[in-house]
Image (cartoon, rainbow, N blue to C red; front, side, top):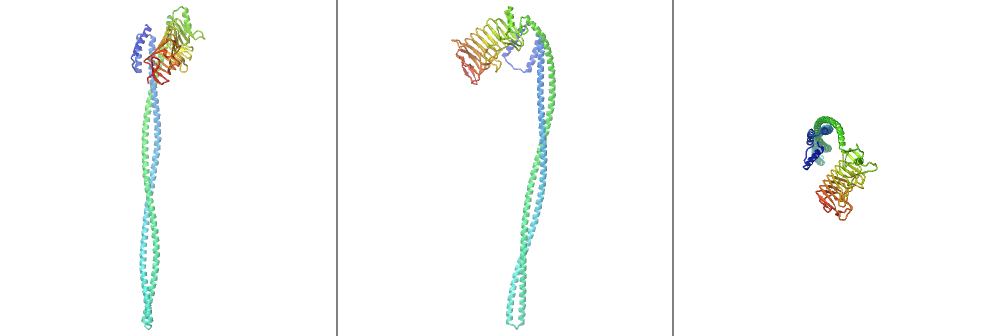
Length: 590
């Protein structure tokens, strides 16, 4: 089986799929992947590939089981929190119910006490009314007695007047009889009549005196009766006031009792409501408890399944590792048989591998870099090495070459899947020839240099690579620097973390960017080394630019020809999107 042809055909098929994007769920993708891997493994793949498929299948199964276990634990935790919340709510409802019950009992006791007070006030009001009736009757009796006395006094006045009149008439008759007797002293009958009349006059006067005394006594009795009547009337009025007061107090007590009874009924209703809410909260708590227990059991089940899947994955991993150990030893033998230089198995540095190839007279050199960081130069004080032959450098994942590479005119080749890192002015310097960099990360932590520098008539092709500084703190000055008549094309690349400009052009250089992203840089373009009648060319196609500004200060814009084809520009200084015109100026879109 030709592995390279198989991989190239697979890549082209997936590239064709990328032209028409579609969406599938993760579960369907996993199942399709597993079935496809099984089918390919059963038809074309080696035993090692089949073990990889089995391990991937076990790992996916473990991830699903772990995800389900995590979700089950989350649900159990949620149910537990809801159960605890329900418990707290039930406790709160129970406390409120107890308080409401105490308030209801208190209100009922107060209502009963108010009713007793109202009954007492009512009895006192009735007693006061009876006292008032009694006092009123006594007042009426006193008034009746006063009327009788007044009537007796009036009759005594009439009798006294009659007696006085009779006494006056008797005295007048006695005086007349005395006068007649004195005129006729010899007539004894007249004298006896005179004596009789005098006696009658004396009797009449005595009677008048007695009547006058009786009248005085009657006046005194009338005055006493009047005082008694007035006293009884005042007492009756006081009794009436007391009775009215007691009646009002009884009515107020009755109203208070009615109010207390209503409050007691309201407190009872609140108590019943709180009790109902407590029962509902208790029922909810029991429901949450059941759900929590079910979720806990489900989480325990999912955890056990995840542990089983983990054991299965560990078993598959152990089988795969053992298979990989065997396959790596076979792979090493295969690579050695192909004449590959392996770092660090065969040579500790890239310079050692190159010198060995030159000493052997080899015209082409293939270098395989294993995982880890490896120096490019043999001398510990040197940080660069020059490539003057046709070379292919490729590496394992997370492989790194520390130092600068000088790609001279006498050489050519490709660098694949290796991280290139340096603290020199340039991590990669292309002085001539045609070179390709695929899937690499080319970075520099030196703020005074450019990461990649192209000069002469060199040709550089980069694909799916990253250019720039290490991060926002350790930035490079320029990402890609173009001189002379050098040409470079970047496809699906990222240029970032540049303190001055992402791209720098001078002389008659040509730079093309397609489907690239430029971000976290001070400016997009810088024009250096202004030349007479020299125009450099920059072509941007379907790129996304997110920088502080478009041009670096001091750049000669009229000597840069810019082609803007379907790009998106966002510059922080204006906070507006824009479009670069052919003369290099920026036209705002919003």
